[in-house]
Length: 65
Image (tube, rainbow, N blue to C red; front, side):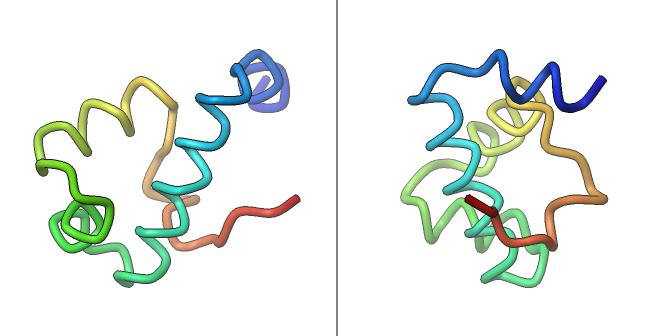
């Protein structure tokens, strides 16, 4: 199911998702710090995570190819 969800993202959405996951990995899962790294607000970060289906299990995993 997850594969279907990820493959249905546009290139822009996938790039945005990869950036968020990378920022979360860089900040050791600290969402406020990750939002700061990305230059977005914390509330925006939570909204984008929900929209792009980024859960707590994968926030520590760096994006792959």
